Amino acid sequence: MQIISEGFIEFGKAIRGYMTNDAILHAPESSTSSPVRIPRDNETLEHFQIKGMYPSGEGVGFVVGIISMAIDGEKCALKVAVVLFSK
Image (cartoon, rainbow, N blue to C red):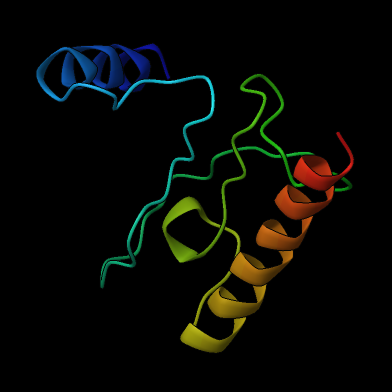
């Protein structure tokens, strides 16, 4: 995961305002499957080591299919909303 964070930092140098403490990482849907599974807590749906990261969908190994992918994304979005609005 260090490579991803370094990429964000470098991109933030090129695009002013990209890197903030309030940033939300959003990845578009792709048409590829991945054998990689990004770990997350079963209760919070948050990554175990990267706070504020909610991996979801087919690309990170949690579901297969467009409907289950949408439902998984919705579950993560609801968890994010609970965290944001409970502050």
